[in-house]
Image 1 (tube, rainbow, N blue to C red):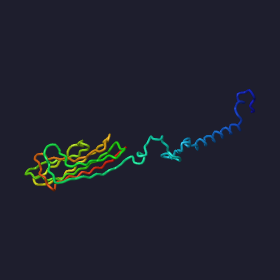
Image 2: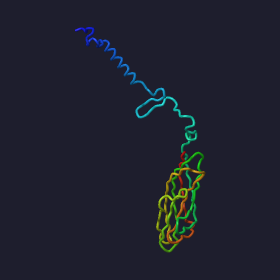
Image 3: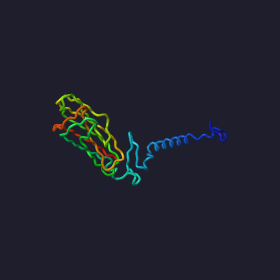
Image 4: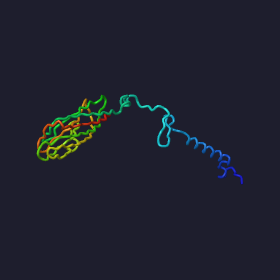
Length: 201
């Protein structure tokens, strides 16, 4: 039955017009699916990330060339000494490493490892202590070991710290002591201190 002008049914488009409209919608959907709205920025989304087809640009001066070329700077330091004795009381500094701060770095992640070897020359059991200090701050409790008379001990101590607001230098030290009586100077007594430093901008 044909549509008559003025009747509601006559307002519907013809079958050909509907087919063309559907085809136009399908074509638009295909074009939108294939389009990359980030193309003007040189970016293309891919599974798991983004590809850049152009140069990534940041405002001039927002990141310094030094920070881009060397955001971190590692340093390994070793110091040691021997032929010393141990005193009683608070831990006494045995060895120190002075660390020079490279220009432009404001923080330092510091890892310190100290090892003490010492002889108990006294006639009774005695304890010895060792601690790592980073820029004057003791890191954790002192390591402790008991030595029988006329025997040696070996003690490790470690410490980690993030230093901020750096100046030109800072230092790391190993400090030790005995508990009851002083231990005599002995050429076989030694302490090693190894420091790993990662400087940050």
